[in-house]
Length: 193
Image (spheres, helix red, strand yellow):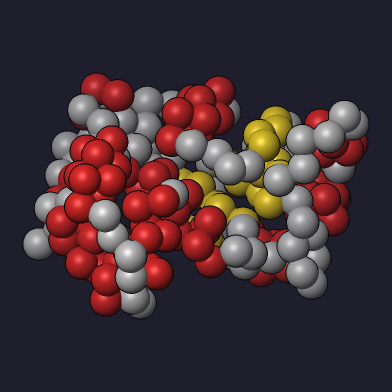
């Protein structure tokens, strides 16, 4: 988190950057995850950091900024997992998940889409609120790479042992996704062409 935040804010410590870049190297092919994920997060920095980590693990990630955007995206696409922030403007993650579950029931969907709550609140009872809304799992923010990997693996999105994926092309895609020149520069430091 600090690495990308530092770059976006213009204050980069070379030693810290080197450690953080090394820590974010792509996973070996045998440990890479596969799957199409929807990341629903209203904070743009949190969204970009989580998306970068998930892409780095081999996941394909689409983002939405609130619950209503998530429902709109879900109506037109198939996903393996939704990572849902709980507190967002317009429509929070609880209501978005309740509506998703109603849509699934009405459509007779044979399989329930896993939804994992991402929340800054780690208070007693928060997990129960998430489960009551129809979410399947719960993680407290800030989430790190290890936590995200565990969430994705637990959700049966799976580990892709034969990706044939080249991390440089994934990074090139990421590099093009960032609006900020310093962040594009960071992606290039990871090896994006």
